[in-house]
Length: 219
Image 1 (cartoon, rainbow, N blue to C red):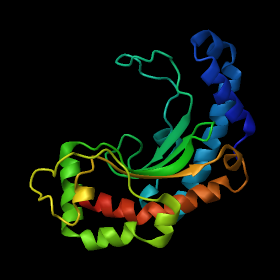
Image 2 (image 1 turned 60 degrees about the vertical axis):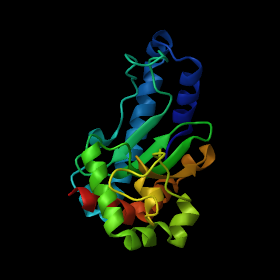
Image 3 (image 1 turned 45 degrees about the vertical axis):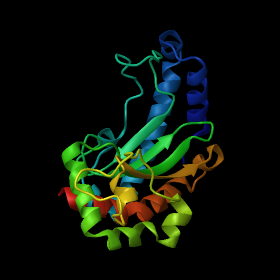
Image 4 (image 1 turned 135 degrees about the horizontal axis):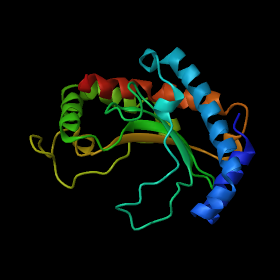
């Protein structure tokens, strides 16, 4: 289970997001980092049992750095105030759809996943797969457990139908999406409970058919 001290560190970092404070509290950061990575390893261990495509995945392949790239950002605070990990075949830099866990105090933690802002060639393949096999796609996202857990698929949408598709296409709402993602909120109270990893793996299991559908299009 995740330690409450990890959430405490992230809360404090949000209040003191600067290098002098971070350097002064580096030991606390390292403890939080180790705690989060331990949890990520537990998630990997469970994922590899329920999704064979996760075979060989390591913690370093999944966890994102806490240091921000501020070169092109108006917000020059140097550190992220969350910890996150992405799980997909080939690691976090893979173009494939994957699972995602986001840890951020204040009710912003979540277990989710999908395909986030893919390059045009990959997005074209996914749109084609949805168009050709919409009945199968619809059966996945209309599953009662899926809807109860995630609600609906989210993502930035085009204002008009993408090139090659008509506005009256039955799948047009999904064909217009630039990303296809789902998420399930995890409260601050829940994230430090012993059942947290089990619950995250349940979320991942429910989204597995969606990821398989998307990744089939890109294979």
